[in-house]
Amino acid sequence: MLEKFLNIWKIKDLRHAFLFVFGVMVLFRVAAHIPLPGIDLVALRSFFEANQVLGLLNIFSGGTINRFSVVALGVAPFITSSIIFQLLGMIVPSIEAIQKDGEAGQKKINQWTRLATVPLAMLQSFALLSLLRQSQFQIISRNDAFFVITLIMTVTAGTVFLMWLGELISEKKIGNGISLMIFAGILAGLPQQVSQLIVSFDSSQIFTWVIYALIALITIVGVVYVTEAQRNIPVQYARQTRGTGVLSGGVASHLPLRVNMAGVIPIIFAISILIFPSVIAQFFLTARTQWVADAARWVIAILQNQAVYGISYFLLVFAFTFFYTAIIFQPDQIAENLQKQGGFIPGIRPGKPTSEYLQAVISRINLFGASFLGLIAVLPILAQGSGGNQLLAVGGTSLLIVVSVVIESVKQVESQITMRQYDAY
Image (cartoon, rainbow, N blue to C red; front, side):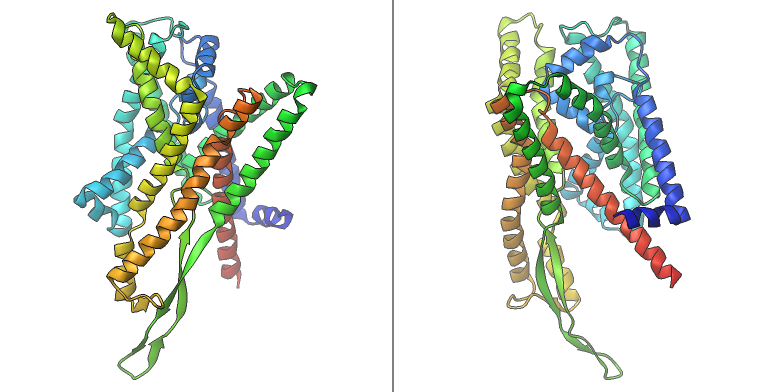
């Protein structure tokens, strides 16, 4: 590992790329600490501590919502926009055709994603401000229209700024810029969480702390194992006779099917679904109609129940893992491409039987991958229920993101080093 770091530092391009990314991360964290006017940060922190679901949303913003800075929404609107276009690619044939149009099509989809981020950021910032204004903590000191519009425009500009920084990071090819910003937000909150753990340490709860440490270790090992795990489907390419009479082909290869194709996207979907009823209910807490206000309180109380929340979270992650994998993995298309290239799976007829076989295999793989993601999501909730500590409520999701981002970045860096070694020869 030390040798790899030394190689990175010796290669001028990689050294400059790392220094650039580090500088952008510092700029991001500085912006995250520039507060917006008229916001009571103490009341805001109390509001987020009382709402576990919003704490999860804070993770995907890059740890910026709970400070309500000029980049309060972080990269959450861009993530939402990306998910929308991925779903539209499955529903709308014209968008699906553009997605399949190679690099040119991908550039067009990326442009639409950026454009859609702006109205989504405005909508999300308005919803968040409305939620804070409805809160009992008196977070916002002013409610006039000019002040609210100013906050919305500022937060939207902050999101566009972070989107631009994320793309600059991605261009350096040492990791995905958006993922690295979320990663930086999680790590930035780590010192505060550690200090809170130290302050709240009680020698009588030493067994609880040991359980938390074991859960963290198991989570890291499990995430690395499942992220790297894949099922290799053997593929044989038939021999072909060319015009000169030379035989080519007959090569044995394999088709890798990853256990966790969906990554952390199912967790993002599940959090979005869990957040929606709670956010909507917050608007009706002060409704004049009594049964509406009572229904809103009931919805919030239900989602605050650890058993209901944990079961719902697990089931949603499990279901969305299958759903998203069905979007990104197309067995019919893979079977068709194999047939065009003269490839076949030994013992399986080309065409429809190959597609059915791949679908059966990915379904069995998904059963394990979905169960694992769901377990990772609810592990901290189980530990919290047994130990009563509120500090690790979102630890499993955070660890999943951190480990996944690190693995992705390490792979990209290794590919950069390997490419330069080949160039040297």
